[in-house]
Length: 178
Image (tube, rainbow, N blue to C red; front, side, top):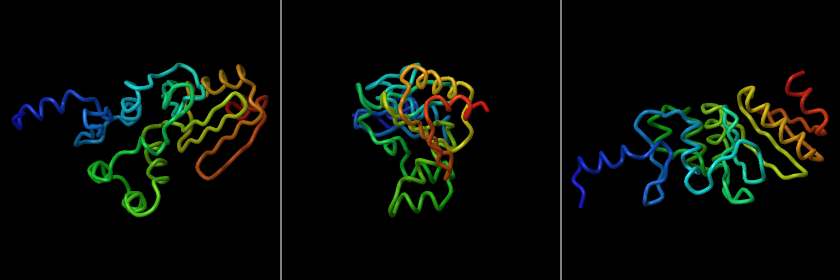
């Protein structure tokens, strides 16, 4: 049995978001860098990629693709959000916490995206959806362009806040940089 001090030392060995032996996310007292929080949840089981693919769940501000499955995305994007207790400690908006507690985790996912700069990705060789809550970084745009040029999907959908835009692959670069 661990003493309280040993427990605290062991807990500090986990990275924010990393799953412990019980499958719980380590959520530090103070809000961590949330792109890393997302990454650490999936790194051990699924790894990362430097390009978007069908297993991608989030595209981080540095252009890294967080894999949420093997071959295809197997996890719901909402699985990455922190617990209500962490949201409260990290002073997230009360309306986001209340909605998550009662009915929907969508606004909590959007708040995580706002705070982390991550873009939610749904991808296949024929389709790409990019949902973002703050402007994309240059590295995120580059990763999107790389995917679009490589696969030439039939449809590319961008959701920025409440605005949706559906494009052909040929129009993506102009949309992002135009």
